[in-house]
Image (tube, rainbow over all chains, first blue to last red; front, side, top):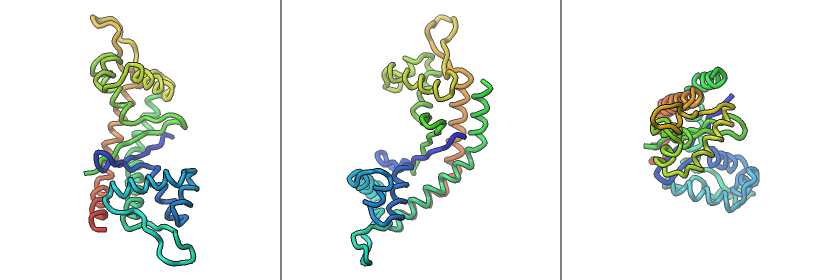
Length: 113
Length: 113
């Protein structure tokens, strides 16, 4: 079955797609940029570049240094970072639902043509 | 206002997004691959590569040589090519509608954070 993948164009130069969202989710899950990057087979430099780009796009930081705790030096999502993930996933779900009938019809039209 | 852009992943290696769809629309409107490519500031070679890729993805040709007429050598869409455009645009419209409330909410959450 065909899958949709979504990009949100936020300003002429700013685009959020599945890669950036997954990176934020991995940073949230593993507690640091380096651990998140590692799980995605991405270099720290590349991950950091994407975080900087998202900060620019949204005009506010998407992650912040984790305060205190045994694991100093970690990172956690800011409210903006969390909102971005949550809304992206909600949009994805809504879009997939809205598109499902068309996707099936397209599949059939191709088979019958 | 943020805009959605959609890609449809049809097989592990096949992806249809706004660029391929626009190319098909331009070929349909201007009657040949070369004219369609020109309107998109794309080389003929690049446009032809995208057409070949779509033929592979759908397992059937998306365009065909135009038969007869004064303007021999032109190209027109096949039923598969037309179905792909129509369904992609319908999916886009449905997805944008389904996503609108989330897009607005995201915008507000970012401003308020």
